[in-house]
Length: 164
Image (cartoon, rainbow, N blue to C red; front, side, top):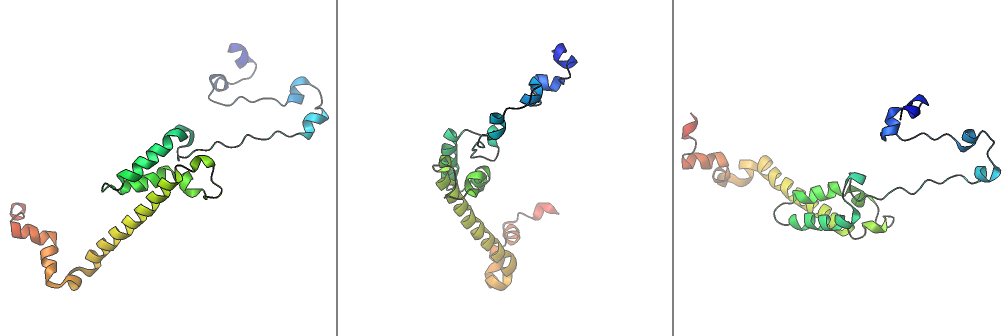
């Protein structure tokens, strides 16, 4: 390693923290590039396909279908926020158009799309329910409102006497 540091190679490069810089082939050999190597440019390999937002740190495609299915099914057990987590975690699958998405996404896509639809329906119902009670209040429900409001129920049951 001392020889590499003396030659001008940083220690980080030796440890693998930085990519190794390669000199151009013509400069390394001290000769001009041949016409065959100049005519055929190198193509970059196709980018890796990842079904999860955390890319290579996430789960492999083989496990992704099982996890997406479990998140979708557990969302029906009164845990609809799992549908939102499913959509966020598998965002690359949800974002890719169905026609041009990689074939590896095909078994995962139905669960993620259904999770998105389920969470959207849940969110609309929840917001409608909350808005009805917040905006409507006593004007909407009339005299029944006094029986629906929680602080009135606490007064009726004597649960507020210890507060003051």
